[in-house]
Image (cartoon, rainbow, N blue to C red; front, side, top):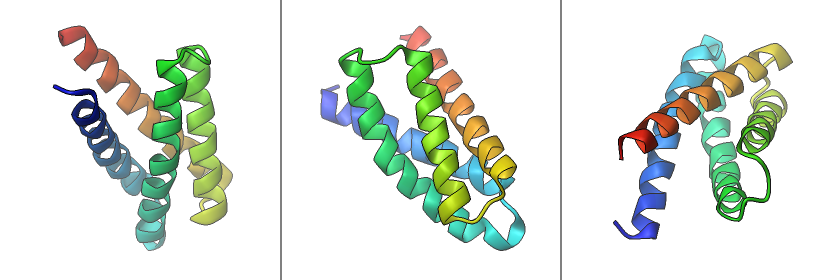
Length: 108
């Protein structure tokens, strides 16, 4: 698979998994706004994190923590989630995709 196709596959998988988790953890009345913010935040953080990982600019864990923090900030400030809700949603979503990526990478 060429690198562009592989990147788009990972991006799509990330968006699907993280959007599902964030929407599930969002308050009922805020799910649509939360979903939109989560997708937008991921569209910003994913390419930057991919480049940083590709060039080994930061250790993997530091990169994951920065991404989760940026996404939590977006969820709190743009979607109006309480800070604890935003951190839980961002951390849960990023943990899920990190574990998925590690598992799929181990397979092949």
